[in-house]
Amino acid sequence: MLKIITIIGARPQIIKAAAISRAIRNHFPDRIQEIIVHTGQHYDNSMSQVFIDELGTPQPDYNLNIGSASHGKQTAGMITGVEEILVKEAPDYLVVYGDTNSTLAAAIAASKMHIPIVHIEAGLRSFNKSMPEEINRIVCDHVSSLLFSPTLTGFNNLISEGFSYKNKSPFTADNPGIFHCGDVMYDNSLFFKKIATDKSNVLDEYDLENKAFILSTIHRNNNTDQPERLTAIFKALNKISTDNQIHVVLPLHPRTSKLLDKNLDSNLLEEVRSNPLIQLIPPVSFLDMIQLESHCQMVVTDSGGVQKEAYFFKKPCIILRPETEWTEIVDAGSGVIADADEKKITESYRQLMAKSGELNYPPIFGNGTAAEFICGVMLENE
Ligand code: UD1
Ligand code: UDP
Image 1: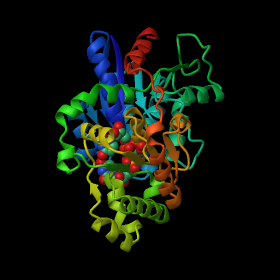
Image 2: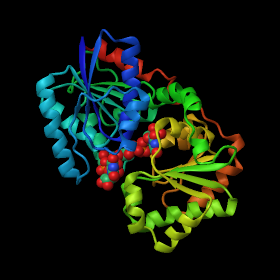
Image 3: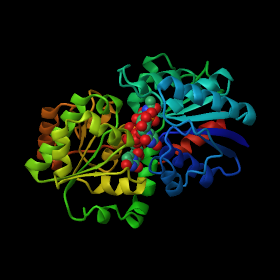
């Protein structure tokens, strides 16, 4: 029996982990034992437990309850906590997702104990080291033994950094194996789409049935923490909604909710709050999010996961960042990088609407079986 420890902590990791847990349950229940460790990086019910309850991610076996803190303090607490669990459980693999502080902390703890690391969502790069995520993902990739890239661009980034696709099993941190395998988030979107249609009543709840609406999420630190950037984004959303009489729905990350009063010009905030077309709502569950994504007219976001889901559901997307790791979306023409620039955002809306009927969404995120593939490789390399 292969014993793996899966690290979750931030919202998207709890969602991604559901795909691997489902693959283990359905295909390898007698061959893989999974222990779930939640770092507690995200802790509000709407950022954590709701996904565990809804998506079948197993209840965590451990919760470090680290919570929010500065990067150093948060990461240090997680390293200590994960190390203690690794000593006790002695797993065959540590599985980590993405690029958060939980990913980094667990990778540091496991690498020093020579526990092979499996990095799911390896190879993604923004080439912008002012992002905490870029540091986290580079460090994690370079101490991992099995690296699974969802896209060809991610796979090629690894090769550019010296990884070789010619390495042969057994894979180790010094002889890592790299794989281009598709995206576990795509697996999830396919799997949960019908369930979301049957179970979610978010469209009813926010009176969106038969209404055209833009779905927007904003949580990147460089957008929430810089008043001029946050202001430019909200000015653009306010203008797009008023000029086009289109609804805008914003499920707000707690980071953003907490900073609106502080970092948004008070007149603009008042305008946004009194605009009947703009709905600022609490974070929604994944099934609700899928419903919103699949029924919206367009997505406007700085989230990595939401950019991809827009593509999965064939929706144009305005990216509120200076660059993206998911370059294929921009190459395909359905994603436009507008940064936090009011003019670029409003112009991107106009351009995407003008060509919305002609947009193409070639299949670049696999075929919905990335999680099974990853489990298979872990078992072969045992
Ligand atoms: C983190 C990740 C980011 C990821 C995002 C997913 C890092 C460095 N960043 O960003 O890559 O895209 O998660 O959502 O790991 N807060 C709450 N309740 C919660 C969680 C957070 O109120 O349950 C608030 C706190 O004020 C906290 C702030 O949000 O200080 C930021 O949380 P944190 O986990 O540090 O970073 P995120 O912005 O969520
Ligand atoms: N998500 C959700 N509810 C929300 C906002 C996002 O379920 O209110 C989901 C979204 O569908 C995607 C993931 O959370 O699967 C993306 O997480 P987030 O935007 O927090 O982080 P990122 O992907 O940028 O790291």
